Image 1 (cartoon, rainbow, N blue to C red):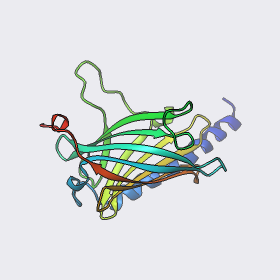
Image 2 (spheres, rainbow, N blue to C red; image 1 turned 90 degrees about the horizontal axis):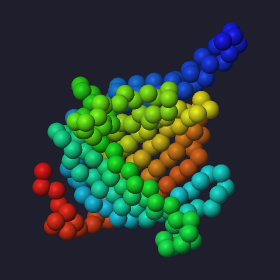
Image 3 (cartoon, rainbow, N blue to C red; image 1 turned 180 degrees about the vertical axis):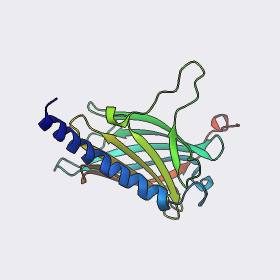
Image 4 (cartoon, helix red, strand yellow; image 1 turned 90 degrees about the vertical axis):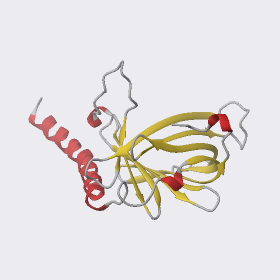
Length: 207
């Protein structure tokens, strides 16, 4: 590796690590969460709709949402959600996108926030998170304004991406706000609202 390529690599790394260190530093220094507000009011199943606004001038799209937030181990929580991005407001047409994801969080040791953890699997060794290889780093905080989930990742071209997902309690359910930020620029916003959905008795967790 030449001196020039080493300096370029170092500059690119500093551009990525700088925002991550700053974000984690601010969070650790003063974010309320695991020791403050209660998670319990957020537990439940929610259904709703949202608008996806790609700020590159693309058409605003509608999305159906199905979200479940439930306890996980001691003091943690699980978020499971299904997003269905519609085409011209319809589901049963070509081009509809469906995404399913589950994320687990436990309280960070001696900190006022939560960190993502992997599901227990006795047959598989726990994988190490490698941010510089593209693995997302996720954490969450809780305050009087809502439940906030952050996801930081390094893109293949060396830029960084930060996703912020805010969920605020309402009289009927949750209001949703999402931002995707690439290299400090907001490139996507999602806003939506949900209502609590009753679970059939056979689907209610008994653990």
